[in-house]
Length: 309
Image 1 (cartoon, helix red, strand yellow):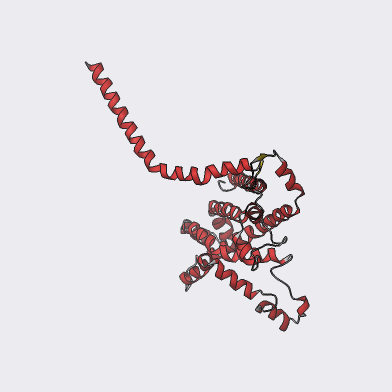
Image 2: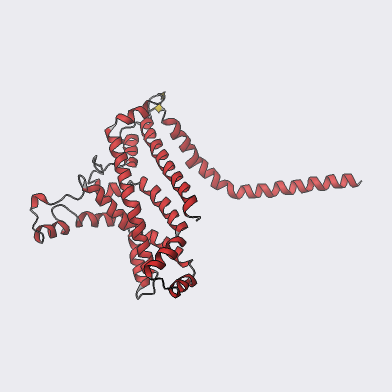
């Protein structure tokens, strides 16, 4: 009798556990189903597509590594790869430094601090179309105030005035615009990190005779290592994905990038939806994925010895 009761109790407990698990799975299922349908499956298909030739109409043809071999000889791909790397190398450290300095200054008890914090964050929430329009007007080759100053104040001849959105200067403009637009966003992250540093550390440093630079060097920077790592990873990934800023600033009325402004994401889009070379564009996307994944892995490896010291 006791054995039968124990068996019934065990079965009842098992049913309750199954019911609890089903309820839990029902709550998380929408998220995972959405991830599988809209992210995982397209990613896997894009990976397979890199080894295929397909224009969306004709039958799919397996080509092995031919798409990747063609990339080596493609000057537009090489230019977009070089531009993306230069843009990332220029944007990440500049944004990191400016946002950190901005956060340190606006973390002080100064008059109008809330106003200046809002002002710093404004470019990030402002309409990209609006702010890029202002930038293109300010730096316009013939009508912009910047070139007007160069002409009237510095007496630079008209034929030598720079075209800020062409040639070698276009990457500089993309970098400067990105730094200006995103430093407010990462300033907020650094401000959150600064709020977690105990004031007693600064008081102890002051008593020990440390000046402002020494307190920043030996207290603030070490305490912000986790935040700095997070900002660096986010910045790097976002820089490799640049597309909309390049189109809005350097795309002109046709939304077409020149070779000097071409970036990887734009080249992926161009091959996929302008030329309908879906397999080739997937191969470019795989290169971008491997590049971002490798850089992120290196950053995590460095972080093991950096953030947890």
